[in-house]
Image 1 (cartoon, one colour):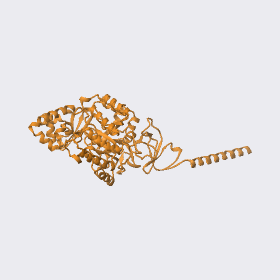
Image 2 (tube, one colour):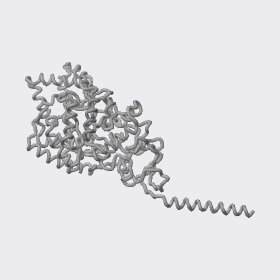
Image 3 (cartoon, one colour):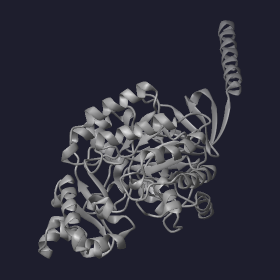
Image 4 (tube, one colour):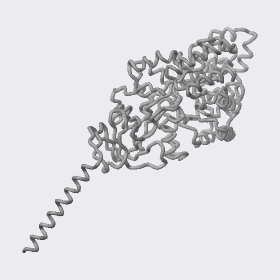
Length: 525
């Protein structure tokens, strides 16, 4: 009896000791006060090749904890159970034309990009930016934007301010004025300069002009983002155009980012291996060359830009038709247009996706030429007289797409523009088709190349990674349902499978629905 009492006393003392120990241990654990706690998800941090099953805590606009939840005392206002879902940094889209929506208070939600899992868009690409940067930055901040925005200054925009849209070469005085404007825009917050050397008026510039302006960008710790002078065989050719970009980086001493890298048209198919070798050699030399790519076999641009000779459009559309109506020039224009149509794969490969004359939409140039009973090249000018015409051009092959996609220096981009499904579907399509279905790349490669790598290229501080102290731009998607819905018949369908989007610590998408909150910011270097 006495032994039993003694045993019970010892047992009671042990229990009390354990409780005291647990209490002391619990009190000694770090306390974390959070607004949002994400648990049970498969977490890709934007850097590692392997996922982990850690919890992520958010307070205000920052990530305050990542790790084993049991190691700390977390008090959260809201807990998201991400069981069966992927948790990742928000995607960063390095090439968009989303500024056209951001400037409009009714469209600044940026939902076509938001529902792809994109939390930051880069705008002002292809040498075309809204001017001046300071004015549009103030507009975006005044009415609110749905995603973060990184602004570039467009070379073509600066050139127009100084020289109009003529094909003249820049004088020393022109260069001084343009350099001053580039400095002004960099000082207002631009992260770098973009060029559209394929398009007018950028196409009228020479390499020396671009280098001179790029040096000003370099002095401001910016980067150079380029739509190459030629992605096919229009003028200098694809490989010489890449060599030009590399030379700009070499002489101006700044990073070079090639937008929507591709081999456009049958003349340059399967040149990707040579291009990769060329870029690898430049990188070994110490030139920071990277690129982005959208996961489609069709490009998109204006019909005029796609097939009209650059010399013929100098001065604008009115000047183009003055030349076209001149009997001494018309035949040359038509012949060069015919050659450009062939470069694009033929008139049946040019699908009208947007037009002032809505009756043209959904038809290709061959179909239009047959209905008008004229040659395809003549049909082009009849279409252009009706107003603006935009085309999807089916001109790439899988070998080149796969080769570029596998490179560690190639990131995901959309070149999101109206009429092409890439504006609504690029990132989910890359996952659904090239990760899940075709297994060209794995999940971590896709996520890292859509997040941290892009942030590093554009020198965006404290974003693109799930890391304590970083801004809380986080997405949660369903790996079984995350996919694009937009296609060439209906390019305006939102992607599906995104469950949550958190931007600057606030919910923008919750359980697959837009919260009507504009949580984005104009970012600064």
